[in-house]
Figure 1 (cartoon, one colour):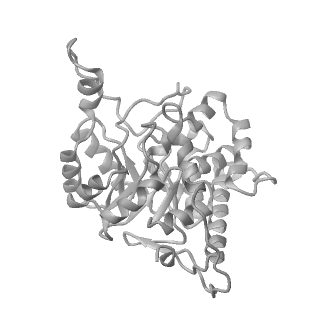
Figure 2 (cartoon, rainbow, N blue to C red):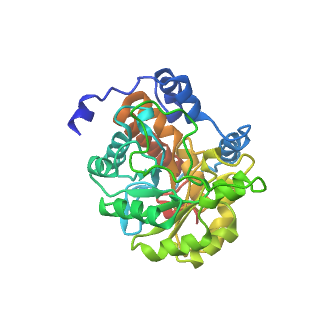
Figure 3 (tube, rainbow, N blue to C red):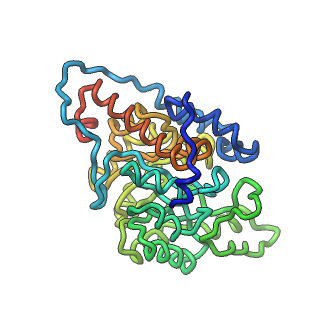
Length: 353
């Protein structure tokens, strides 16, 4: 921790919003790394639509409301947080800064928030947990079979991670970038080999997807672990209903930041139907497209219990390490509080009322 603090750089003076970190981050990253961070699937339609969906929603000022004593506190699975802005799981963070996931974990803890650590982290789960100084959640990718998957989950739980977020919309695959020497998914075993295929078989259906999880695997995973289990990557209300019926403890509405299926609905456009399907039984989180505190407000007003940010905190990480990540969180917190005050909401629970 001392080594990371010693290397902290002051935040650029011209940064007033998370997006102001964009140019600073781009200037510090190799072009291939920047492209990997910013790119979306296909033609990038879903990537663009994510932000447009938030921009299309208008905010209604409600002056004269008494919001003294207002706050953004909330509880999830017995944990209390000062605000609803979590750090989404982002792979290979040492691509963006030498302090990697440890810096992000420290920043989340310093801002009384939460980081969800990726299966594809470039530092060990144990290192990151030590840097965080507060409980974190673990994001799980299916590891090709049940034994390898359970081994990874058990390691995370043993290291102190207190919830598992199972990402189901993007079966595990190699990074869409040639990773530099010394950067890899250090917590994973070598990937399983694909089965031998006959000429009649499909590489997608019979090869790649043969190692993808199914609903039976979700039910099996629920039975194996004692911690809260959230399912990430749902956009259809029937999938939400099924996940709840299998005993899952939370849902994450997400189109993976527009990085998987181009043309998929935006997370924001899908949120209301997922919230209706959940019917208050489990918390509903949202990611994909959030760029400021007003976006956070809009997601909460439409029924999300909390949100996760991805690219914006990586812009801060690339620019200024741990201090940059903490600054992005703080900026969004301030924007959320100001939006709440100007719309007459003194607490998170009032937003969706």
